[in-house]
Length: 284
Picture 1 (spheres, rainbow, N blue to C red):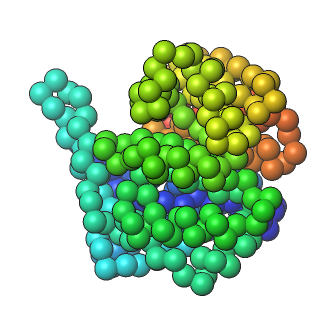
Picture 2 (cartoon, one colour):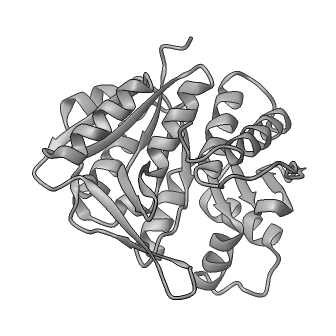
């Protein structure tokens, strides 16, 4: 067991699904899977002084997960999910909620100094308060800390500026086949191949590793030295794909910190993500 902490910082919320509420938020899913894999995962976020906040605390305490959840004035985050006339889910990520106002505290600074790896995304940077906290946290990390930026584009809550700052401050960039299409559009590089685009991002922003997941089509890991690892996606009985990407990232990070090669880390990440797809929800 490592005393060093692996942090997921950002949004935590309830997905209000037609069949009931389910805990969501990529950073929380990431930290949960890190803990499941035997390292010390910590969720850093904010919740409200309300029943939804209390439920998050008890739910995560039952999972034996380390929490750094600050109580703030704003209500606990929810995502209202409704199915339209043809059954396609429409997401409304409610604004001005607790995770938009994560405060930077002296405790958080101490946490940063003991962090071995961190995963952060773009969604929690939509509001200035949390954006500043995430940036101060990342700037307070030890030099050798592994910083993972999981792009995680949601609705209109991202900008080139936020993505560029995050890419400049990460060692590992993770994106999926839908996100790469959007990034190529923003960067006006639609014409080039995915591999060339990943190489260009690595060169421009000095990123060591780019992970590109393509659902059932497999996944790629591009190293700064030009090496490429490809893994096919295993065929499993899929219950749902919620949290599969977060479990992939968690397994990849844990493997790297255990001194395994990129190819070994990629193989383990693929297997863990496939297992997550055979369960309902991200935290099983």
